[in-house]
Image (cartoon, rainbow over all chains, first blue to last red; front, side, top):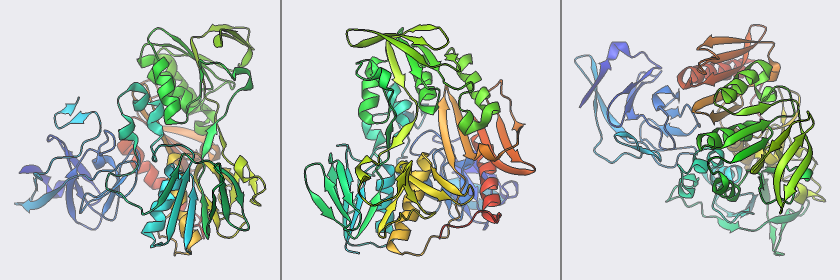
Length: 116
Length: 396
């Protein structure tokens, strides 16, 4: 389990990137929901926490692939593979992330430890 | 509609096929492509694929388990269209009769007649082009690139990182000025020069020296002579519309379409690089070659063709990106509408700026260099401004 930050520090519409391996992005949507997915786009090295959130989707800040925050599914090219989704809980006012045990889908040239 | 035929099997064609299935089209879907490959992503052809960091498999646009229930006719060039009968004729004589047609044949690299027929002169548009160029990018070689556009600049970046000596030759005084405006065009030119690329401005080829079928040198109109081991011509693209002669379609610089991709003939739409949609903001037809336009237009055009209710998504400002010398360039909006540019963050010298283009007090475009997070915020602000402005409207 990873501690992200106090819930009060993440405003609606904002996202943060956790320096886990691989990094995880936590989103607080305008509607007040919390989601956690792998931060790295499965197409190329880009941080989804920097992306454009609309409803329950985040668009990669670089090449416009869209991922569903609830399922991790990719909806637009160029990415083809989903990102992992992680469980989120608020415990004693802190956002906590329970990392998925699945293998992540990292882009070419990246491993869990970073660049090849 | 029983049969939907899509001519063109690259990003726009694939996006059209996906959109048709997503909108519930359950009939026969035929996809024609002149290249033998399955749909692939072209932007890395001048960057990571050319460098050898991505493989052809990485470029595939389809997911491994994706099945659009389509008849793929790959390696088949369309030679003609009977627009009234909605019949497509292929190179091998096959006729495809359809109830609806999406034209998504893209564009080809523009060529220079004075450089035709030499074995060391390249253009870059396809996977094969990139493979051939990659094989020639050997350290120490002198590469001359005609045209300092985005393809030229990206190849300059890739080639110089591989140890080639690179010269960009640009016909205009300021590179990238059509896309970025003169002020920011100069900033990106400065990035190239700071990384050791020679940039020659305001000059073109006067004569060509060759030996054994290879170009050995170029004499420029400014009197300079450039020795060359290989040459890349990157002077833009021309829409693939020659096959539409006698089709009855209105074609000028691209297939003329309304703001939803409809052509002058019922049941035929066009999307992507080959199409010139009516731009309501500019009040003229414009051909937009951006990657994002190919996907967005395909979706809108298919909705129009199937008579489906248009999706609620608001149109976003044009967006494109480029990677040069390790700097991520991102641009949204239209620089031509601006009367001034303000640097809101970072600096030109450090190549990490965020510049906003204004017309009076209204932001009309934004450029980011290594500023993805801030860029997204501005791109979003532009989209919201465009959606609320009376001059723009959701395509009918």
